[in-house]
Image 1 (cartoon, rainbow, N blue to C red):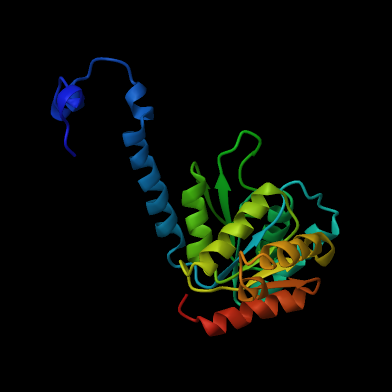
Image 2 (cartoon, one colour):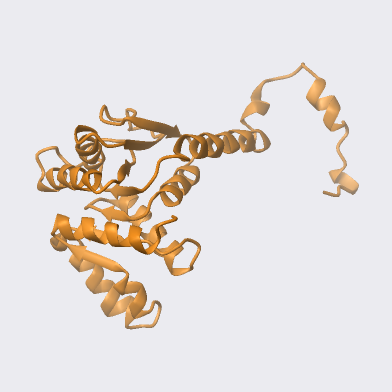
Length: 236
């Protein structure tokens, strides 16, 4: 870095480091945040390094426990554990809690990757291995790095964000291709129709991009897609 003219600082870096006077607001500045960001990556990598094959289950925190989708998420997690997968969720309520419950009660590893939000109350009680993150991008890296596939249940903007990030990373070959299953044909059909009729029709994506998404109401089909993905990429 080069500083000239009015960018030259009146004190040296060592002087500022060793000076104990002044306010403590410096711990909230961007350079200091780099250390916090680094610590989240180190903690995440260290905690999940030996996780083994895992599938991430996404879906709404607002889903009620009695919802058919929550019941399906719990059963899905049980089936994934039976196939040797750990189950990763965002660690919150709703679909996430249902999936964590299914995994934990089936004797599997139930991972929760929580996020600091004003309306979240912490990890749900069925998480057996959990990390809370401050930064979305650090958390998202853990989902992608340690998952062999994604099952996306109905949800809102947060679920859409996770879905489209996964699709984008696969499309741009930033990650090894992995299966992405959309569970709930009634919920997802309108979105896929719009993608096909508008986005694909106008040439913004390819047919292969759309074909990468599996739409189903069959839990066994969803699990089979994850197993096939593991066989195709056994080292991921």
